[in-house]
Length: 270
Image (cartoon, rainbow, N blue to C red; front, top):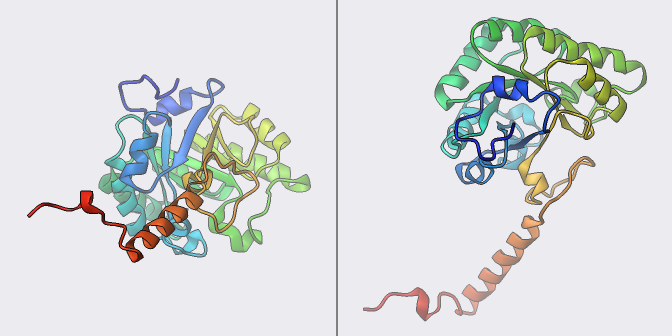
């Protein structure tokens, strides 16, 4: 099932039902125009807390607030007709207790029109995931490299190699058992990602976790070449819009300084 040619909005249940079928397509979005561009092509659109680094120039996702996620979620919602909108729960909004998480998730859902929320963590977040799901909030989980825990993990490193593989498998199984409708696997070795995908009854969404996952997600500014501060190994750039935009700005500046823009055709008669 894909959103292409589909007239109704995609639901979390639809995404769950895509397990083992045509790969699920997703990108991040933070603005209305970008959401409009991807609505016909993506099964779900993720309003990621990566917005902090991509649009706000923050050094990590840790400084992103609930208000920021709501603002960008509202913008993305205006650009979607069919794709499911999933909104990241930012650092500090859900870890304290299931009750704290529910209050934050309920606000995200109510104020953005999101169809689901996403939160990071495995075994230790299973109770919270179950608490949210039992109260009507669909949850997409996220295990492996969890950017909100980079200080604990020691940086943006591949997760689940060697002796760490069983724990990551346990994390994935725990969030599935807790009721998550899908799980993002970030920076997970190919073999382990394949085993997790085969073991779980819910879809796995890979980002640096191989083509063996049930779907893929990328940060849209990475794949379009708009964010150039660094390029993760798992990113393929499908365009180089950043350099094109810079060239356009340079050309505009030169034409303004030489008074070749605006030209006569850009003005209005008396």
